[in-house]
Image (tube, rainbow, N blue to C red; front, side, top):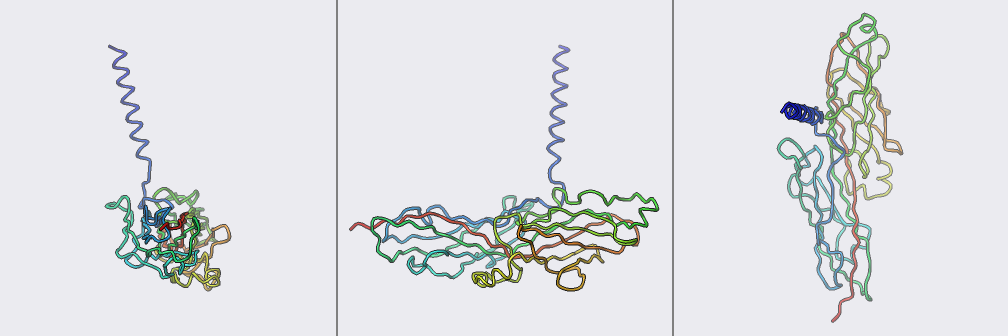
Amino acid sequence: MKKYFIFIFLSLLLALSGCKQQDTGSTGTFIGGTDGVSVEFVNLAPSSQFNQNDSVRVKVLLKNKGETRVATGNAKARIFGVTLENFGLTQDYKTNLGPIEARGEFTSDGGEQEVELGTIKYKLPVINSEDYTLRARLCYPYQTKALVDVCIKSTLSQESGEEICNIGGEKVVSGSVSSAPVQITSITEQTRGSDQIRFDVVIENKGVGEVYPVNSKCEDLDNEIKRVENRNKINVKVNSPVGVVCSFRSGEPSAEGTITLDSTGKDTLSCWKNVEETVVDKLSLTLSYVYRDQITKQITIYQSRR
C-alpha cells in the first residue's frame, strides 16, 4: 500500500511538471512566427491533366497565417510565365473580394479566400500532349509589429548604482514580434555617451518571397527595372517611446524612414534616445512593406480525340 501511495505522489509531481512546461510558450503580445499570406492552387482548378478542348477554371486559395489583416482588394494574384494568349488568360491581376482576417484571439487559424484567375482555353494545336509549368504570383501589403521590453538607462545611472533594469541580453523574446515574413530577429542595448541609450535592431526577410516598398504597385513590380530598383526596401516607424530616433541612410535621424536589406535579406538599424532617468519601457516598432510570392504547378494538355 505504501508503494502505491508513493507511485501516486510521483505521478502527480510529473503531471504538475508537465503543466508548467506547457505554460512556457509565447507569453508576449503576439502569436509570433514567420508566416504571412500563403498561396496555393485550388484542387482541380486547374487539374494537372486535361484535354485541349476543355475549359478549365484556374483559382488560387489565399490563407492569412500571419497577424496583419488584408483589406478587400489589397491582395493581388495573376498567372505568368507562359504566353497567356495561348491559354485564353490575361495578365490582369485579380483581387480578394473581401477582407482576409489575420490570426488572433478569435481567428486562431486566420482567414482565407479563393481568387478566380480565369479559364484556360488552350488555342494551339496539340500532338499527343504538351507539358507546361503554370505559375501564379501573389502580391500584397503587410506589416510586422514589435512590442519589446527595454531598459532606458544611461552611463551616469549605471555608475550611480541604480538597478531598476538591465540593458544586457537579448530583448526579443517569444511573443514580442507579430507573425509575418519580415521579422525583427534581435534587439540589443548599450549606452551611448553619458546620457543616451542605443538600440540595435536586426531586421530579416525570413519568408521565401521578396520585399518591396509599402507604396509599391503590384503592376509596376512586373517591370524588371522597377523591381530591381525597389527590392528589399522596408518602411520602419518607431511608435514609442517618445524621443527615439534612428539612423536612416537617407536623411537626418528620425523616428520613421526606409531601410534596405542586403543580399542576404538582412539589415541592422541603430536607434537611440536621450535618458533623463532610469525606467522600464516598451519599444514599439512597425515595419510596412509589400510582399511578393509565387507558386508553380505542372500541367499536361492532351490532344483531343474526335
